[in-house]
Length: 434
Image (cartoon, rainbow, N blue to C red; front, side, top):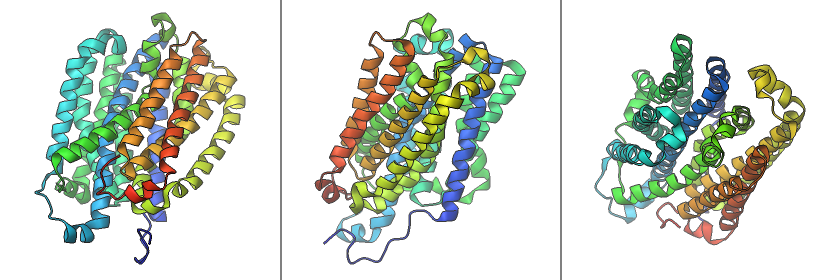
C-alpha cells in the first residue's frame, strides 16, 4: 500500500492565481537585479565594478547560506501541516520554543563566525575596504535571516501572495537604495551598503501584512538541536549552491591573478546575465517546489521530469539566442569595454541550465529529508568546479568548463540517490536524515 493510498486526494500545492503572483514576484526580482548590474557600471570604473561584483557575490553567497534556514523551515512547516493529526496521535509533542528566537541565535552565530574568520579571507575577497564591507555583511546576515525565516513560514503555510510580496519588495527595495546612493555619491562601499540594506524590506512589508506579522509567532515543536542540525545540513547544500550560483566571482578571484580579475568584469556580468532568466525565477519558485515535493513524497523523480524538460527547452533556445544576439546585447547595455565571445555566452547559458537542474534535485533531496545526499551533491559540484578553475586554461574556457562539469557531477549524485526505491520508504518527515 502506498503512502497516500486510501486517503482523500490532496489539494494542489499552489493555485493558478497564486502561481501567477509568485511568477510576477520572480520577474520583479529578476528585473531589479538586472537594473542593479546595469546601473553600477555607469557609476564605477571597470576595475571598481569588478570589486563591487566581488562584494555582490559575497553578499548573495551569505544569503545562500542562510537559504538553508528558509529551506528547512519550509519543510518543517509543511510537514507539520501535512502530518499534524497522525503525528499528534502517535507521539508526545516536545516543548515548543519561539521559532524566531532560534533563528536570531543562528544568525548571530553566523555573523560572529563571519567577522572572526574575515581576518583570513577579508582582504583577498573584498579588497582594500574589507573591514567596512565585512561589517556590512554581518548586519545583512541578521537582517536576511529574518527575511528567510518569514519566507519559509509563508511558503510552508502556502500564503503565496504574501510570500510574493516579500520577495518582490526585497529586490525592489535594494534597487531603490542602490539607485539613490549611486546618484548621490557612487562609491564601492556606499553601493555595497545599499545592496545589503535591501534585506530589511521585511520591516516595511510587515507594517501592511497581518499574515507576515503572525508568522513571528510560529512555534518550533521539535528539539532545537535536531532543527539546528537539519538547518546545518541544508545550509551546507545552499552554501555550495550559492558558491556556484552567485559566489562564482569569489571562486574566480581567488584562482585568478589580480590584474586578470580586475579586467574580468565583462565575463562576470555575462555569467550573471545568462543565469538570471533561469535561476532568478527558480530561486523564487523553489519554495513552491519544496512544498510540492513534501506533499507528494511518493512520486519521487517523476515529479521532477516535466520541470527538467522545460528547463532543457529554455536552455536550448537561450543558448542559440546568446550565441547570435548576446555579444551585441552586452555592448549595447554596457559599452564596448564589455564585449564577450559568442561561444562563451552560449556555453554559460548551457551551464546555467545544468545549475538549475542541480538546484532542483538538491531541493528535492532536502524535501525528502535526504539532507546528506543534497549536501554531498552540492559539495562535490563545488569542489570539482574549484579544481577546474585551478587548471592552466584560458580564463574564459576555465569559467565555462568549470561551470558545466561541476554541476553535472552534482546532478548525477542526486539523481542516483533519488532513483533508489528506498527513498520513498524513508522520506517521511519524521524519518532520520540520510
